[in-house]
Image (cartoon, rainbow, N blue to C red):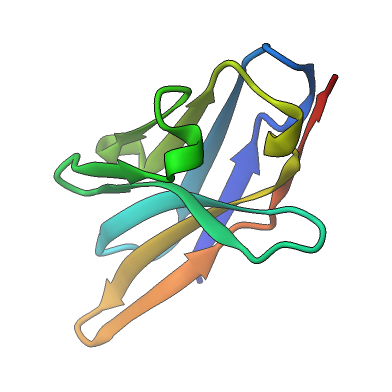
Length: 120
């Protein structure tokens, strides 16, 4: 059983910063991808930023220049540094990982979600 545990969400004022962390644990052979998604009320769940095991990154246009994703492969962790936060960044943020747990078992895993609220 693989589990993703998130931390770092909370309430912050517009223009402030927040750092999200996600740790994967369990029977892990390898992690191919880790990333962050978010979902606001009335919106679909969209990719915020992702990072491969080799360090290649991508991010949504709406957060480019403000958010930075990073990864610690040794600790099976991924981070999202969020700067210059805006009220429209308010959402539930979900950690996501594509993890191989066996010879023929590779699955998409999700964290429980952490609330990020940006006040004006």
